[in-house]
Image (cartoon, rainbow over all chains, first blue to last red; front, side):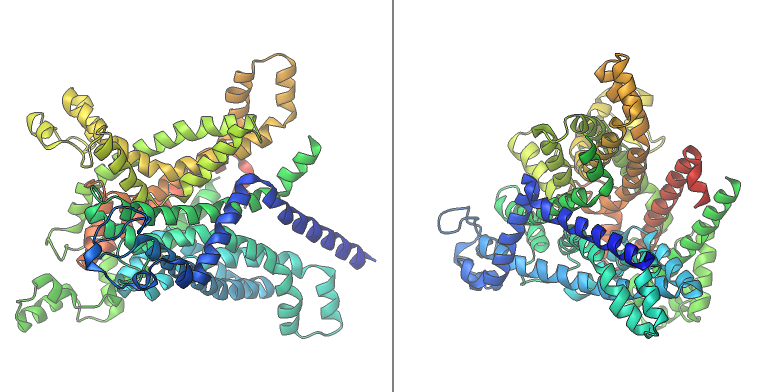
Length: 300
Length: 338
């Protein structure tokens, strides 16, 4: 009886959670963010067809048309090697999103299992994992990333490793707290009672029930990860030329910035819009899911 | 409270030791031999060998780490491989410029963020609230290096209002030399009554500090808004309204007083983070602070400087965090149990 009631309570909470998520697009700003993300995904998949000069987007230079200001032929102008900025930005979206996904994958595959282990087994294992996680969280993550990539040597892969390493403890923490609450649920207890193996309980009963907050958190973090990667690119520690990376393009344009302002302005604008879109959606999700705020909406 | 303090300080020591260990390991991964970097490309092999022995590089790693820690406790962070000056001297030269920038920036962030957050909580779900949300989320989404460049082209190149960078105009600085007391130009010129230099120094502060403040402004606005929303629904606010206290007083005195805690916590964390943030904008504004110092070091593989500044920036972050935690614990006794 108790078990059934618990299960019902749990699934009601889950339904409310999903309803909250489905409401987010009603806020105009969140809808705007979702729109930009949609456009971004389209450009990632169809970059060769959307870019006016796909070869230049991949890095081919065209020295006859250096540093042209925006015109009909080149809507956002050209850079110091005569490459069309619009094409570079479109191809840059591929690198940015791919890099972000790689970071998320690394972070999740480190953070989630560690959190699962810490939460499920508890005791000494829990202590060791969590103290280590706390230690890493005590440092400013971006600084740690810069220090790591400065010693590993600048390259995109090193930058991705460097951004991921200070980041996974957030997910370990989140995962652990989820596991701790779900471990006590009746259905886990019942599974244990009928002799389901430990591994099966962890992966079939606990893990799937912990994932939705993790996915929400990953969405919230996308913006910051894009910003961190762009920042490393700007410092020259990330993607190396001739690949089109937004951060690198901003830094390339610096030399000519006072006259040929369009190189840095537009590529930096692309970073800004993308991060803004992810953050607006993240902010919308947070508002929709914070039960305290929602409850108050109903009250007043 | 005493037990809480002791526990937190012990943890601080562990964290700082871990920090030193991490930077030490990182510095040993760096490609290239520090001794030959220090001596330059024309050094003879026996010179390099001699210096390696002198730097302790021929000793086992754990001993090297021990020596490094021993030197650190005496304030010795080694010498820059590029300029051959002690790292600690370099840090002391560059720190005041960064701190001056940070203090200005956090003041700006509080002055804009708190009123904007309060007003947008009051006008929840109106156009103004949406604007403030867009502003807050927008300013946390800006790549600071890009914002810095946009400010430069807008306010220097096109409008000609503010200088492009530096801490003071060369001519103004030569005609009105600044006496070095603290290294904070604004403070030093104010104390010595050096008005032309003060005006110029303030003028140079505007663009970099607004750039640095952008992120914190957004965070502080959001934080103030969400705590104010909760506070404004409390019963005592209704009571205050019913006895006829003016709306302005309810918002900015009765309400804000109870909403300020989380906001100030957020501001503290923003301030702690700012020292790292200087890395991206100081170089663009030619601001001679720690950010410029470490950025230059990264490009010349000057690892003692990178290590020293990283340790300083991270310890600053850790210590400010600790202070914020302690302040909260003083205000709210429930936290001490945790």
